[in-house]
Length: 265
Image (cartoon, rainbow, N blue to C red; front, side, top):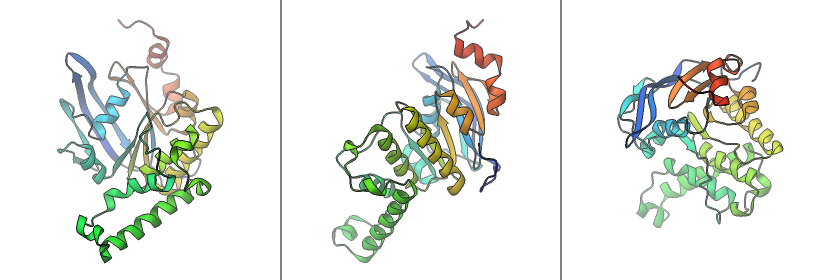
């Protein structure tokens, strides 16, 4: 964690209250509540099947919980769908890459700008001033992200030709292009080698520190979690079993038991 912050941690920006989600008769999440503070890096951890990805899906509108509420900046999100949530200011990356492999790095990042495109079909088709102005602004913003992520040398390369670690960075860039206040990162370092993980950690910290973006991430590498997180919430069987600073969570007996597979009474 950074010793000094450009954007100090603030009040709750995201509040989950008594979230419950079931698939048929199977409970994925049961009565789960926690808060995410503005500008923090918040990790969600837990054993496989603990409900971590389901929780992100509830936040960004892929799933609508049967019970409970999600509030963003004090406002309960009544209309739950990914496009609405994205327009509110919450963006998402996925465990499995969802990039356009034949498109260039820059064009993939430009896709993230679609939320900021207001020109209609005719304005675009006839290249009217509004459409030209938007296209210029969105391309400039995308170029800024390419520079921010230090990937200028691959800006015109087809994403499918890049190594996995760079593809993950492009996906981060596309999420940044939405200008979201909160980024949800689902296993951003899955499948990476040590060097690639170190590089991704550097950019997660850079996004948080220089842009002030609030980050919520799922990650299995406990070394990464302890190094970059401000706070950690631990799920097991869809319930919160620990919540607090990384050093407290690391020594929590419930967390140790969950990861070691100790039988529950």
